[in-house]
Length: 343
Image (cartoon, rainbow, N blue to C red; front, side, top):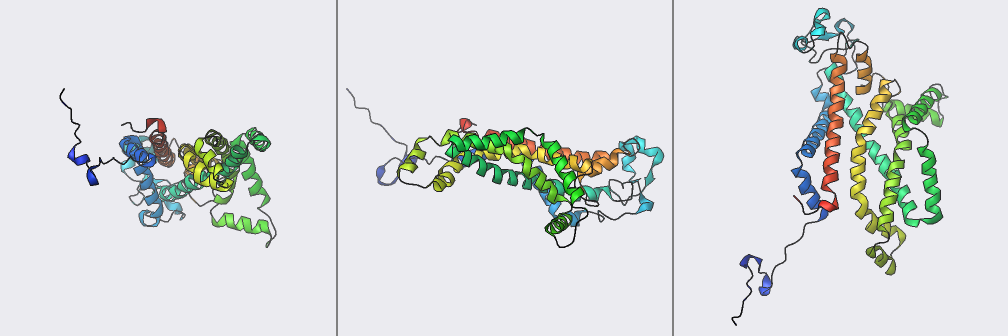
């Protein structure tokens, strides 16, 4: 019988004549590669990067200061706007100085939309950060120790879930704004109020979101920790004497961070919508700080005669929320371990 010789391709021969093994890419590398193949996610990511650049370069892009009121220029529009919104024609006062028109007190809409991106993007990044810090710590402790600790901590979350989040934030904002409006100088509340004013009214929005947004993240983190803590590599870490803190940060969190990032990315449009709604009803940022929600509220009063005052900030809000949704969907597909190695 003829002897069959096995041959190895020359390109797979390593040093010493041994076959060279191909290095397997990590989950993050594989996820990033699949993320780039998702066109909607790439478009969403590029849109977010463009919005960040616009927010950072707002003083250079805006044609006028966002807070300056020119009463003689109120409701002025450029000529091209009449062809898009014919209802403006009978009432129009034309001016080429305002690319998207002026509002009811003569402020430039384009400049206010540009600066409004700063508010929405700040909420888009600070909101998830607060939720991650509080929710991951709380959920990790609950899931890792289990037993009565887990039972008590999750019952607290259940109680907090009993309150409608948006209504709770509205009550908090109304309480903060009414209580801290007339306080004695030099007190702690006085300095908190001053800090809120320096942030344009954003501090209390962050507090409201922070007190309500972490419960879902805590539950998700708890479930992920419960599924990982009984794995063999966790038992091996216990065997060699690793501390609970080391196991938590070196072995558990790196294995559950993917679903947490995806969940928070998908939750970002909710944070943006919450800020826009609060500003719409007058409990958001302090005037004259521009917010897309407050601009939509102001424009809605004249939407039949000057629809540009409400539609343009609404479009900016919608595009931003769509971008984060597309990116979140792409991250969810890219970081799903069941899809690893697929095209």
